[in-house]
Image: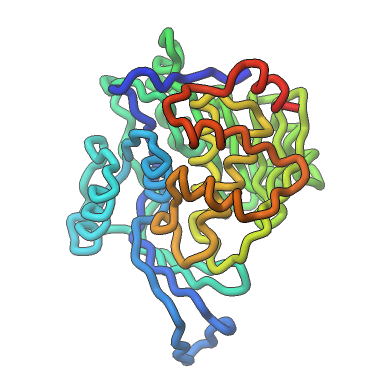
Amino acid sequence: MPHRATLTDPDRRVLVVGPTFLDVVMSGLTHATAPGEEQRVEDCALMPGGAANQAVALTRLGLPTGLCTYLGTDPAGQLVTDMLEAEEVDLSRAEHTRRQNVTVSLALDGDRALTTCGADDVPALSPDASAPTALVADLGAIGAGTDTIARWRGRPTPTMVFGDTGWDPTGRWSEEDLAPLDLVDVFTPNESEAIHYTRTDTAAEAARALAERVPVVVVTCGGDGAVACDGEELLTLPALGVPVVDSTGAGDAFTAGLVWAYLHDLGLRPAVSLACAVAAATLGRPGGSLNAPAPAQVAALLRTTPLPEGFIPDFLNLIDDPAEPAVPPKSRQQSTR
């Protein structure tokens, strides 16, 4: 079983580590724009992207959240900083760099194409920093902060670690890249990444293989939902049937939902159900962090959307009664199967 963090200490925040971008999101394309063509679209949005998607989504779900990242001192960076401060994301662990990363996202046919200027560098985790309730980072950042994270996990109330990975442009998909999984409680690769790393043929096979190395694996499959495994249970959960305008940031919102669920001590199936619901709530408008939902918005979506088979909305009780710290143990045990 993964570590269980706690929500009882107001001084302990969730910490997101990763590169941040100014996202310029264009939606409403009728076709892929050809070289030399100018195509006018119906909507455009500016927002913090990258790791900021997760930080904003977590904050809007009601979890105090900090962001360890580089923010530019240029006008684009100041815009991102202003937007993050307006969302009440804690930037005390952010550091400055001369130029802000920028991504242009073109949304088309339920997917998007990205063009980015910038780097994926992130500040080092300070060995003197206080331990967060939960850490959200990719395997590269987790590996770079091994000593600090190991110390956080050794506390009486250990930091819970949520890790993801990215596309390997070298095509090697080396097992050595997965070494930081020793420090991870919940691993959230996408289907392609999981299959490439495990040399399997399906998301389910990949989830089972990865669950031999980490307590909980949740493989995201885009419009097909998610496959999850905790070493005992293997579950496949379809995505909610909602209109898709733009999928930018949906995976980050999914992770934020998982973090919320595990910090509220939900079981595997209701945790993945909540993650799918939070992701679905971002799809109806262009942009990522701009569309991250509050808990009440997630509840409203579920009350007007047919729920897929196997979907367990136990978390609605917590949203309706936010003072309730967790699902009662009997309900929690019944909902994990």
